[in-house]
Image 1 (tube, helix red, strand yellow):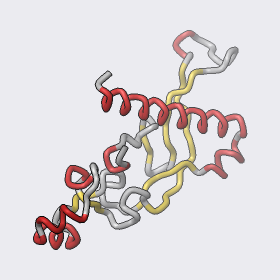
Image 2: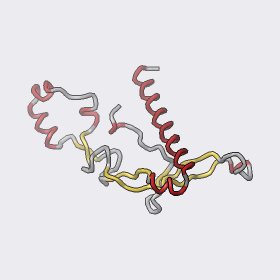
Image 3: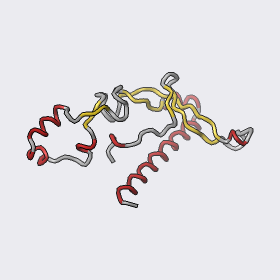
Image 4: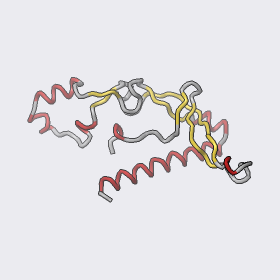
Length: 144
């Protein structure tokens, strides 16, 4: 699966002003006072790091050009394509950071200081999200 084509949004929203991710979390037993309080918005501390998709360049090659891989033959057959490819003619704004060159990530240290239990919950939440995404990708690829 090409990272440039993945859905990296495991969270419901990101509040840049407060630097927090928002996810819906089911209330633990005894927490919900009313039935409508079964779920609440959990705020997860965030920080910026260099975008892992574009390596901080703000752009990358359009995945429709090379996500299935290129061989030496692709360039040998069309020298102009090789020149254009390496000159950035097929580059697009990064799908992950939208050209900002940085992406928000979980601030694990701040989350752990807040609550080890919340940290474990978020780790499992993100892992389940990506497991589901991989399963969906494989099912699409295999035509299930």
